[in-house]
Length: 81
Picture 1 (tube, one colour):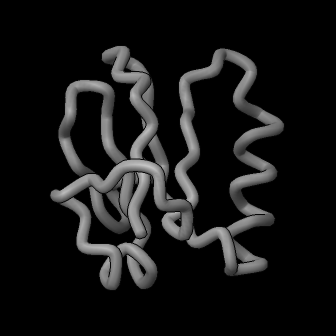
Picture 2: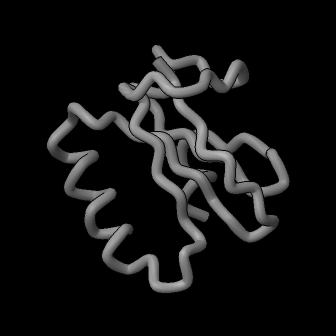
């Protein structure tokens, strides 16, 4: 149920979101429209391409998760820092 994009440049932030949540979709749309430098990747947790074993999907549906290009996993408010 979790997906991961393979782009791992140091400055890239991959944000995991619930693609079935209207609020999440709206927020990701705003972020995507402002992603001029292509430093953000977006992964719908409902896609089933590859599984990121460090992400607890049940928790990720409740608390936003993201991964830095360095591989560090961020949860909650740290995603927005």
